Length: 199
Image (cartoon, rainbow, N blue to C red):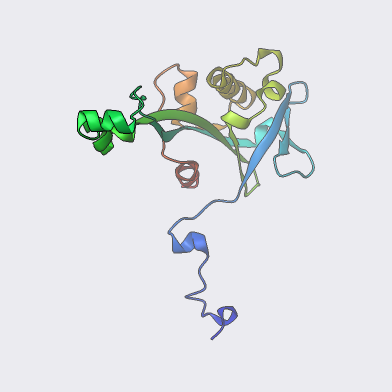
């Protein structure tokens, strides 16, 4: 039997095989508010025509902190002594530090950072629109109010979206930002965020 002739029960997608169901999604490239006609102009990162959405069609807003852990190794400090054949003979062999692997491999440094994401549901649109704060052009969305701080920009965007569409449903992240209260616990991945939003 060829792969093309697999029974329906076996012809699973990779997402189904790993028990992951991703909602249809598209990443936002730019987002521009038009306050006079109460619309928002959205250009998706994968191209295509600009979408114009009325404020009352913005159905719900979601946000998350996403934990990013990186591990790096700091090389060991140099011993500062060049070991010649003569010095090895004089000391009776290699120093203990050269024989100890833990002193040769360096120190492991764990660094924890946080990325931010926002997702938007639009009326009659099956796709979940989302943005990664680290790569989003806040200047287009916030104009002269944009700063060099990603977190400050994100909080400003949350407030602007909430004011622009006050009837939209907001999750705990948006509520925490608006009330200046502690943010919800961070998530482990963008995938986990999508799965929570898709519930």
